[in-house]
Length: 243
Ligand code: NDP
Image (cartoon, rainbow, N blue to C red; front, side):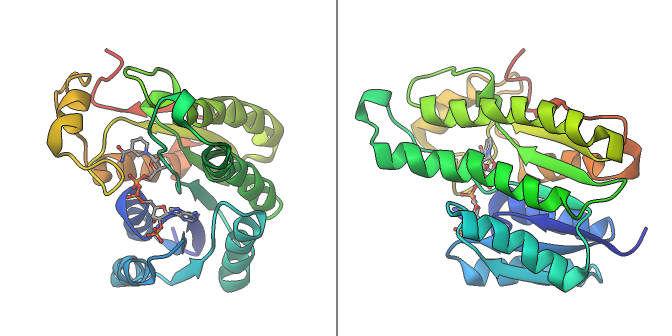
């Protein structure tokens, strides 16, 4: 299938970079946003081009409404369409609630939740039958197996409700909305080393961290025509964290 376009927010590194490459392999032209790391964004864009697809990097702060709108607008301007939106950029503030600040609450709400709402609202205006909205939630959206993750868990849990509502709104237009809920994945945000990684691994049935490709494979499937009857769902890719 050719001439499809995707936007991956936070596509410069980690899970987002792997998703960008997987979608390019599937035949998508790929736009990706980043916050600070232009070099990493260019490296990911090179992996997209290596699959023969067009790439666009967009510096856009996802904690701002302007940044959210800029990502969608630049994608549509460059590719003339947007078929798949992957809201991946996210923050992981860590610490007990009585040590958190209002600034931290605002930042995580803005990036992990408001951005997903604004980007979905904007992208939906351009999407047609076959459109795909994919939100990267977290296994910690449904449970908090250890202290220090209340803000993060709350924003990721909210994505479940948002996906269900959007699925209802846009289902008649042939557009799906789903959440992918990763368990621990080895990235800069959650390196698979040290004592905290040992603790986190102990909650996983497989006893180990997953890879960025584990998440990209699920996103690739959800973005495909074969996944058209899956919507409003939260799909775990977590090594059996819930088992
Ligand atoms: P990383 O920290 O490795 O990468 C984060 C990405 O988001 C980078 O591309 C970064 O851009 C971008 N980003 C950060 N802040 C902003 C911002 N303000 N505006 C725009 N882009 C921004 O994270 P992961 O790959 O680990 O996580 C990706 C998603 O997966 C997140 O939503 C996270 O919550 C979720 N997740 C991760 C898990 C894990 O164990 N790793 C587990 C469960 C869910 P730049 O390079 O410019 O900084």
